[in-house]
Image 1: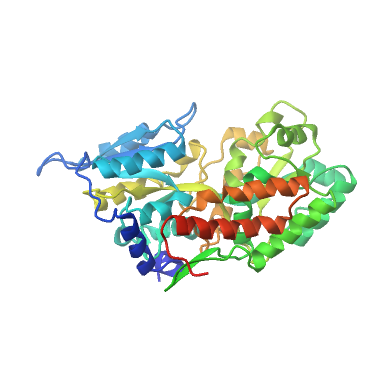
Image 2: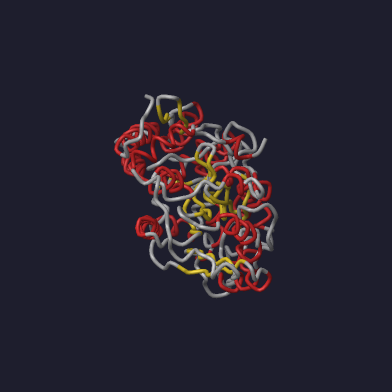
Length: 437
């Protein structure tokens, strides 16, 4: 049984009904994704938003290697410099206009909605050929029911970052369970330190990923429509854990992307952090050249109750857009490109492909010589393969608003998960999708 069939969460009936609701199922493009002629090479365009920054292997350089070795399938890579949301809007506009690129980078949370809108192709047959080359959890993120719309590129599994020097000084050990993390947080708080941070502005992806790590699955379907269960036993366990830390002043409560987090990191009061794997690329930049440089390490997320499982906080794949005239050739390139592990790691990605790229000199320096990417590869392999998103998942940012109220004392952590359920059901109905309450 393949990952596609093993981990599919939604019925084809629901998906087809959803596509009809949007009236876009018949969309087809006649744009630039055509061959140069009956005797010419197949031409594929790939739209991406990878950073291509200094010191990185440029996307065009990677693509040039493919083109040199594959004269019959020529690929043109185009970088989109706008925001991810703007790129999604562009893709929808281009599909309707009939000139969309054949391949495009899309966030995992966008995949279900793009599918029900008829913006991407079902390439399950082609994808199955390459499924074993990728993390099962990441591969599942490119599925909607029995449909597979492309291949995963990068992942954002939750991991645990900690200051090894501070842990040693306080007699703390790396937590392997949620209870141990709670105990370490209590000991650290007694010394004026924080072994964890509650970050309201990251509640949407951060807390949903913790629910996944606890074994919960938020979205599914029945014959009546989509189902939402964001208040299951895993979510309840996560809520109780953070509520206990907040009530007992045993966690730093601050915006992840605000000055408070960086200040606590720099002054040494924050010595532990449950965060996404992709944070490893920049988390410790502010400590460069300070006495704290090289003190931090990364470990697997403590067991939230489901064993060696973590949850997804971000990540993206490369989808085959609706109307691509050469899906087989597009997927051949897709599979090759997304298994160029060292090249993609140079772009700052935590790769979805199996294997371990070489850890950069910067990471080795910042993490005291630890083989960081090997640790992150393990986390990627441990993603909960049952947890995937539903259409409109991005609208659940109302979770962040409720989380801010938790920080202010006018809401509980459990209220955040209630907000998730209410908002998800409202969003699905607003999109014209059937729900089974």
